[in-house]
Image (cartoon, rainbow, N blue to C red; front, side, top):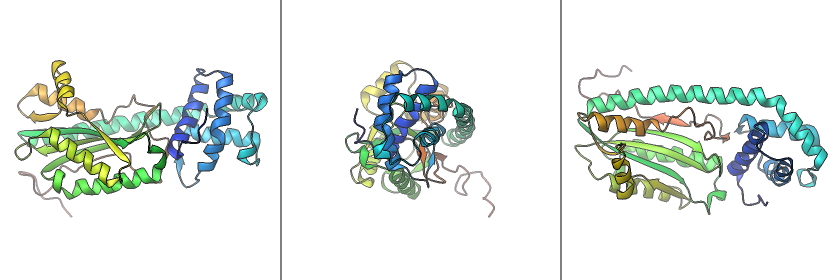
Length: 304
């Protein structure tokens, strides 16, 4: 298999998955050897010591270096002996990998409680809110051009647009976002939740398209998006009694419950295969707006 088309985040995701598959004993020896021969050189080519890598990726690096030493990556061939030594060495890193998973799950639990409180505050304050859910990602055919530094930059600039509350973000009263990386294909993406004052905004389908197109434009055409607001998708959720987007009325308990469920999808501790496998230092992977502002009725001014 050729891995030449993979960029930095996708190479790291493949390496991460290889290590976890080996430790879970769900990959054959021959497949392991083939993947080592395909992934080692591109991984070393993309290696950047200024980035933070997942524990499985670090285990891959440490184990391979212990075996091949200073041999130029392009000259390394993973034969039967080297592959077996690599497999044997990975068990030394099992505890570190398990601790990372525990830490991730705990942080997601904390994020979940924080997000639930934030969304509840907004719902209790406004008689109706327009909930928008959209996934921001990159087109598969061009994703190999996107590095983790690019993704961090794009998200930083997009959050600035959200904070400015202009154009499609006008009358926005709340937002939340979570950055993830696909477990299978390693694609970088953002789950985005936007909550508008329902007295000023009504057309959720139109707004979702506007936000998605803003993302595409801001990424120079590299980005694409998935909107949950097309008619068929909303009808499907509605038939199942789980529609939690569109107009949410404070006095409708079912709508509120569904909206909370939709919001909390951004923070699911069990999604252990979705966290970023490589990060820029100080990179934020979750955040939401601030509820307490001087403009909200009945709240004291924020002390400076």
